[in-house]
Image (cartoon, helix red, strand yellow):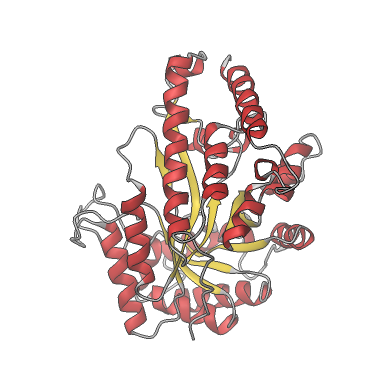
Length: 396
């Protein structure tokens, strides 16, 4: 396939051109184009992170993956090893090994850790879903199981997790059935929506200092403002209700899974949404950013006429989210969901039509236009409109 060769050649030239544009001088001893995303983000107290594939991190045949994670980012998120099916594959027996390895890796590299995820309807262990479906686990027992899992996991990592995604993707989409937005999934079906408040209270009891987030996709900007069909408004109303009931929620995580084939939002629209959540006293974060493209036959054949517009659109989407985050001092972190197409989840999930090109580096770890545009945003942002972050205090 010609795609990788074309990307690698083009991006090396682009990176060299950017590096040569701002040589180090006596008055500017550090060339910012040679700094990592993580280093540049810390100018604004903003943590730039990545999701980490633990198998890739441990692969001796791919040392570049480990080197890039350790040097390019200031925070890390477990892509899968903190999800329930991995942590507790057998009831009462926890497999903390892989997640502990990530924690140790982050400590060695002075990186913060986002915990992902405590409560989600996907990637649950078979013993749990089977027990509920066949009636051997009833409602009261299920609630006890959820409380025990949250308590055990959060206590195990107490003092080591900066932000927890406590509840993930609890809200439906307008294209679901029924189309009116509602609480969806395994936990809402079997425990009702009250499980959300319970989960935050249990997590806070287990770790008083971790920041507790609600995390979801398609909440980058407001739409109609009608909670029946505007998911961002629905989540805003959810957060407001939780705060009213003195639930210890500290932040909202917007995943930022975007696609170049869609009509995406602009920076001002996204910044307005962040500002509105901040108005509730909440921190915000972009937690799973990637921007996928349809892999047409032309793209797969290496046709630059099809590849270039996709790379440009992808870069613009990454930049929109980053600029909006920089503009709001309550946006604490910006995490990409994988950084190289070599280890992206997108091609394995979006197959009809095939999609890819979703990350900021190609399969050979060469930076794409998106990577360089993110660097430019971080380098050229500053007072008076971009200021250091406002630390979020855990809510009691």
